[in-house]
Length: 215
Image (cartoon, rainbow, N blue to C red; front, side, top):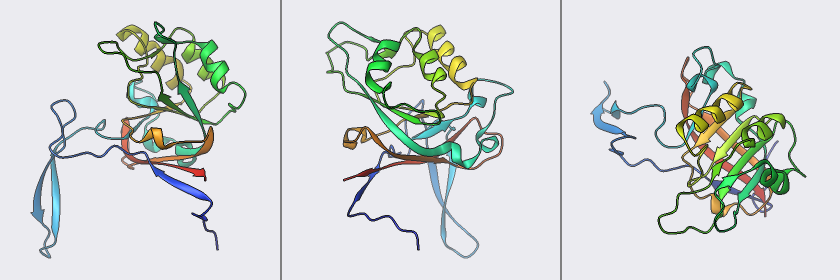
């Protein structure tokens, strides 16, 4: 029988905990009700597909892009590598040179890249962003998912962010956003899984994200 020896491997929950009613831009308003057998149920009266930890499919930006249910289940889990973003004071852009130095030696086609912001925070300063050429570097390495930790941005403007989406999601890459507990990851290589809620035609799906790494 297949089993995972938790004496050898560590299970890390990376999911963001949604607390109803959420916020103005990320609402999750629920009301408790009853089923016919008087068991409890919860009616969701207001939310959207980008609340809490979620997987974004290409349909998020492209009318003819693949939705959550168009992609195979294997697209949402696999070997993962940690991209620790640690920029020098005064630097804000994550360049192709940064990516090559950080993960170029271990990045393989089909990998999941988990990007964690390890740059010391400075009061009033905005977090790092993926600069020109970074999206192309990631696309050239044929990844299947990019997991974005808090404090990391896809660009320094709306146009740059859109370009980053265009470059990667045109290659069927998925984004995973709104993570927590990424600091618990201690290995460069590990297993990652974020299985989105299966609803036909959706641009994005809520997910429970986990990492499994060797102790």
